[in-house]
Each structure stands twice: as structure tokens, then as C-alpha cells.
Image (cartoon, rainbow, N blue to C red; front, side, top):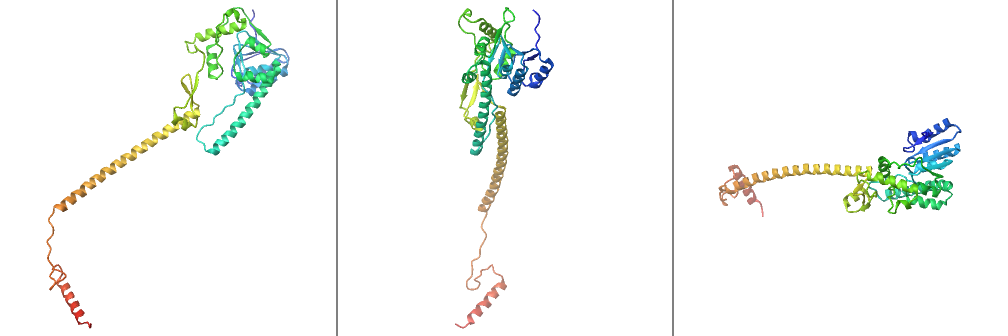
Length: 359
């Protein structure tokens, strides 16, 4: 069998250089009006690029997309403009509602909270509009009702190649050989988990003979890949719970609780920075408090030493003999023996003057 050649291979983040709308436009222009074949194996990316690529495929009019391994999110959207979509028997297909990045953290007063709520409402409405646009694209391709597409997007579940065909997203399921399918790339499994996409389906308990060929092949490949990851993905499920035990952290981050996945806390970079700043401030406050405490200890020691000196002086004065005193002679010197002779004469003269005054 000769090796098949593709005009373009979209196998990375949609929007990156070799998977961007500009690059696809360049390759399409080079291909002219001849049949254009695109190989797709991506978990998604920039929706703007995906919708533009779909429009380019539609405008060309003779594009075939062949899907391999895991194709999700924007990776499925870009195929909607192709004339024909073929899915390899071992591929899996996932669509979901539009996602938007939300990063609102920090201390807020009531005005800030109201503003944040309005901002979130606006982003919610924008996301709903984009989701409806995508749902209409899938409905046009499949012939299904928009409400049914929206329900499927809400489920966020992987479809096998045959299920994608039943939904009308895929026109044909194909297999290039009858050999045992190769296991799914381990890096792809990690990307799926890192991207927050649903885990790939587990192997059903029923006998393989009762499972359609294409479903059996993909499930077998997934099973083999998972078993090779040293039990890291044995259950292939993410357990998530919200814990409200850490009241100080919850208050600091202005959240109701911390989300844990498989026993590990899920924090954003902004939250980590907030925690780091709080710890840094607390450490500086501790150092400042310790410095002030040392100063107070020095002041207390100095006061104790001063008190000891004063107490010693008091004890010395208390133990010393008192000074001798002379009793006042009222007849000759009312001022006492301590007065000088000049003072005595002055007092005697004043007394005489007082006595000669008329009554």
C-alpha cells in the first residue's frame, strides 16, 4: 500500500503557527482548486482560527478531513466546513460548550463585587452566544436539532468513530489495515487530562464480540495505553471535592472552599501569588514585632537598673542620722537661731515702728 500524502496535517494547538488560519490559507492557495485533504489530530485551541478554517474549507468546496486518535473542541469545529469528514476506526470525537477564561480574585468591597458580577454576566452571555453559533454549525452538518446538539455539548463525553457517524458529524468510518491497532500515545493521554477534557471511556464489561468493530478497536487501544502508564490512570477518573476546612486560606482568597482533584489542591497562579504575598507580609510583620519586643526588653532592663539605683539612694537616706535643730527663742529671736544679726536688727526696728502707730 502506498503511503498516503496529505496537503496539511493539523496535529497541534489550533492557532499555533503550523495550525493557524493564516497557514491554512497559504496552503489552500497553493493547492488551487484540486482536492484538498487535511489530516486532523488535535485537542483543540483557538476557536477564532477554527471557525475561520472551517469557512476556508467551505469556500474551497472540495476538502476532505480525516480524523485520527483524539479530536476535540476546536479540532472538531474546523472540520465542519469540509465536504467530507472521515474518521479512523480508532479515533474519538468530543464537542463541548464554549469556554472562557475567568480570573477574578482578591479582596473586594460591595462595589467591586457588583462590578465583578456584571462582568461575569457579560462573559456568560458572550459564551452562550458563541456556544449557540457552534451548535448551529454542528446542526447544519449533522441535520440534528440545535437543542439536541446543545445537550450533547453539555454532556462533554467522548464519542467513538461510529457514534460520531451516527450523530452525523462524520460521513465515513475507515480503517487502513486489519492489524492490531496501535496504542494511544501516552503524551496524548496526559494532554487530555491537562486540558481538563473528559477522560477517555473505559473498556465496557461485556464480551468484545458484542461490541461493534470500530468501538472495540478504540476501546482496546485505550485499554492498552492506560495499562502501560504504571497504574497512573488505572481508574482513569478524576475525583474532585470542595473542602471548606481551611478558613484562613478561604478568607484570604475570597472563596467558599478549595477544590481538590485526586487529593491535590487546585489553585490558580493569581491565588498562589496572593498566598505568597500574605506569607511574605506576615514574615515581615513577625520580624518587626520581634525587633520591637527586643527594644522593649532593653527599656525594661534599663528601668529596672534605674529603680535599683533609686532604691539604693532611698535606703541610704533612711539609714543616715538626722540634722541637729535649735529651738526658737520667742522672746529674743522669733526667727530662730538660724537668723543673721542683720536680720534680727531689721525685725526689731519693724516691731518698734509697729508699736508707735496710733490705735
